[in-house]
Length: 272
Image (cartoon, rainbow, N blue to C red; front, side):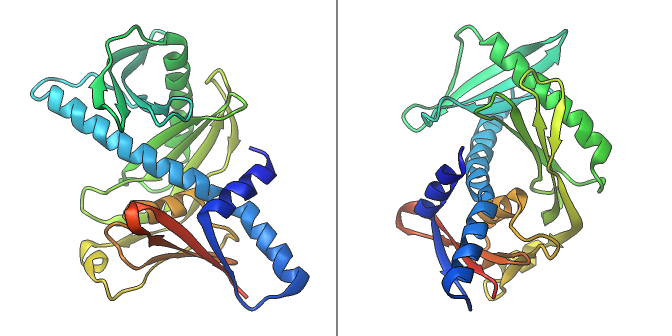
C-alpha cells in the first residue's frame, strides 16, 4: 500500500490527540506518527486471523475426536481477496507438496464448512513452504524457551509473504508480551528476505492482575518510537478481558475503546 493509502486508512479508524505541541512541529510529529502506526492495520487484521484460526482448530478437534490429527506446524489460514471469506488449511508439507488433511471455509453467511472441492495445490504448496522457511529461522533466533507462540501468514501485494510469530495464550494462564518475530519470505516461499523481529525483556501478567479492573494495565516498550505489531495485537487480543489496557513507547501512547456494535476504536496520544 502506498503511504497516502496508509494515512487515509488510519484516519478512518484512529482517533488522534496531540499533547503539548502546536503549529508545524505538531503537524510534523503527527505525520511521523501516522507512518509509524501503519502496524495498527496489520494488528487489526491479525486479530481477525487469530479468531478464525481458533474456530478452525476447534472444528478440527471436534471432527477428529479420538483420532490422530494429521496436521503439521505448516497449517495456515488465508483471506480470499478481501471478501471476508476465510479458509483454513490443515495438513503437512511432504515431498515438495502440501498434503491436505482438512480444508474449511469460514464466512459470516455460512459459518464454518468443510470444503471437498479440488485443492489449489500451487497456492497451498507456496504458503506451506513459506511457513517452513520462516519456522527454521524462528527456531534458530527465538530467545526465550518454553513460551508458546502462534504463527500467522499473509501474502503481500508484491507476492512475498509476511510471517509473524506472536506470543499466544500460555498454558499456565499468563498473558505475555515482549517478543515477536516477523519475517518477509520470497514469493516462492524459499528465502527470508527481511527480518523485522523485535525482542525485549518478556513480561508476564497473571490472571489475578488481569481481573482487577482498578488496575491500569500498561504495555511498556521503552526502546522504540512506535508501537510494534505484536504490541498492538496484544491490545486487540486482550481488550475483551482487560478493561484498562494501554501501550506506551518513546513517542506514543495507545489505548483501545469499545464502541457500540462491537467495533473497536484506536486512540493515541503523542508524548510531549
